[in-house]
Image (cartoon, rainbow, N blue to C red; front, side):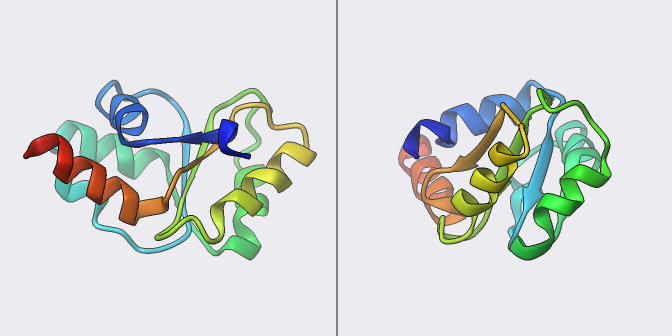
Length: 114
């Protein structure tokens, strides 16, 4: 299911461009420490902090069209692909997870900035 995954560059571009989406956070991550205040406000507005078991319901509660972008992030990609699969079964056509999770984002960001 890697075609539904994105990496650091795609994710960072979504955040920096403040693209409208739902960011489902399955684990606590210090994401906002990477960005300036405007992007931090965007992250606050788009984030849903939940568990894997409740993630699909949390997205559905937003009552957004099924073409609205959803990005799911966990620590290590152990839970996010399953959530994306469930969203797809419900007709969400722009659901993605971060390949490798937060740990991969951190590693790729460090390689980019070094």
